[in-house]
Length: 231
Image: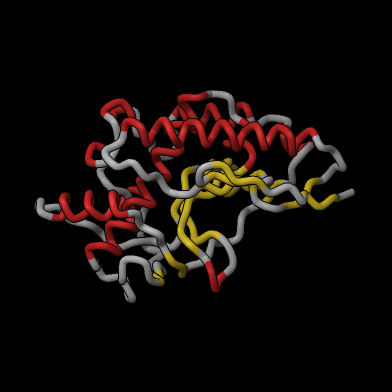
């Protein structure tokens, strides 16, 4: 039996998206709402120590995502409908429900690094067309690896967050996977559809200023990808 999850909430750039649940219970929704609060709090703490005050938007989706036998903990993609899609971070239910603070924080920093990479490409006009600072962009380039589409965390985040920066298979993502055991009773499991390959990106003035400051240095940026995520 399925039911529509009609709850939608926003808190400081973090929100719970609409979705469907396999059982007619309010318990998963209540726990996800608590997860939204936890994600929003961690996001604010990351911003407090970062070199920019504005962090990317985060959408929590009420599903469990898997790919090639592994859990997908998060990704950067264009959120919303095609005509109004804006790039942000998408977090599935297991990550939002994980109570391992360090693991979730590391995961968010990883995904934020992808978003700041896209913002950097747009502001610097590095091969994305069109590439105006608040316009639409298309990031279809499936040949790149996850590491190719990140900024240097030392340029953007606190020393502690940069030092604990994670990649695929890190202990942080394993901690999220461990706590995900049993959640399939409450959430549908599936492989997510590829996110929108084109959309808009809202870049705040402090982020633009930081990108321009970094642009004075001899840094090399590789081409972007449509959707980047951590498994």
